[in-house]
Length: 622
Image (cartoon, rainbow, N blue to C red; front, side, top):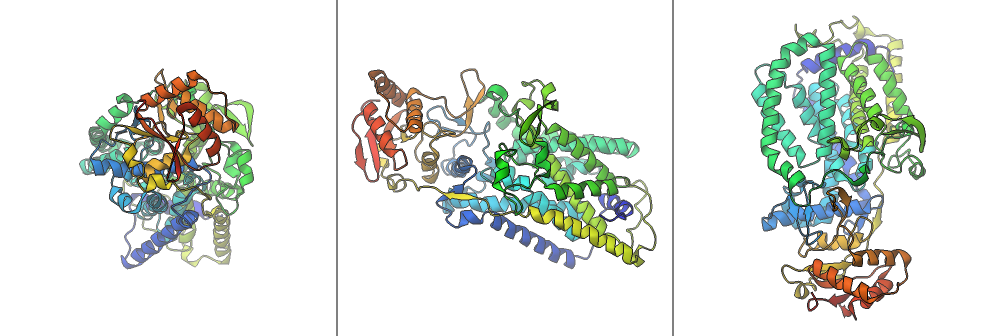
């Protein structure tokens, strides 16, 4: 890294306060090229899905993949039938699922409902996943190029990292909600502009609209962004107390307007989330609290990068891969902070973010290279039932560190790009920037300075290239039975009754049968499913509470042999069919088809062979 970053970082503060205007043609061309590159990266990441988009799912999180396909179908169904999208009985019949209390992505699936109806949920999933990655990189590029750095190359590098960082690409394996971060840069920019004099109404209204919409995209990422903004504002106020006092009035007024508008727009959905049917309080046993970031994860290459391998997942990658910067980027980032932090307010704020959220992401116990140490982490001192904390996963706090590193990349690259050029004009009086002047004569920098700049560029490129994403791993999945896709089920399932697929969908079993519902546009309700709902104590648990018959199905699948069936088992099966309001039980082809057919025959009597499925018509018994 170039020592001149210390002096050139002065200019970064000036850019924050008043980004320089440039001729329109060159930035427009650069912007188009940047967005085009991001689109190509999005296509590359999803390439393995497009090979056979109808029959491929994530090999890392296939159930999550199927869940989000189901969500796209839910959005289309809600729009088509004008039903309340906050709740559905098309899964977990007859109790239903509180969609606001689950990852529902309503801010995406509802507007895209016409496309889902036209293209189908499989195509929409792959199309949206790549688009969300690209859009996040694009809005990050806009934030950096318009509000922080002069160099378009610096903004491009930072935007590419923010959109396609190893931790973000990792979540693209079945969790598109965590790559749908395109609104977050806009929210951050608006928060940092709340103190502008004379614009508190406009800034507040825009912030309120952005926050309200983000609630329907990903509440968890919104919370992380809010925590990060809080740290940024406090860190700024500590460093610039006079400027902070001068802007406090406008800031608080705009914040009040934004908060009030966001609350007005989201009050009922949030009430429904915590008080509507199938709402819950916390998760049983606080299952997420132990998921802290392993310290070795920061210097390890992620699996889905060109330098990564699958071997690391067996040790430190068992939960999530959120940071996974690799040791070259960690060294370069630390060097950049050391060189920038003395004179750059943005760099000092980034340093605070990195420290605070790195420590916070450790969790209740410090983990190192896949092993728990005897050292207690910060979460060990927090009560499990603390509001908001009860639902948080410590490792995901490190996503704020990812964002900070992305901005730092842009700052460092910009400092290198402007070395040797005339410094920007001194900031206006009262601007919140460092006032030290950059050294004179930089336009005539000698060979030594040019060599140092080259070393800086080489170091940054060498740190970033190993993190270039690879196409996400995908696997083939069996298509639904023709009986389902061709509508052969219709004569058997009247309105108000359910189709019971075997195995019954759950977070462990029944991946393929959950897709039956998604790929038919939710035309029939199914019991069970993949969601979070309340147990008898009101705590959140994954999936529907098991009925005797579903438990028997799962245990038979695991054992691969038919257990002894008693009259009590048969009575319970009839009771369960009555509870589910079953019309027919349907078994398609699969690895456990024979033993499951024997099981259901022992419980419900002989099956009919209809098209390519085994069918038990139970309408006369329930």
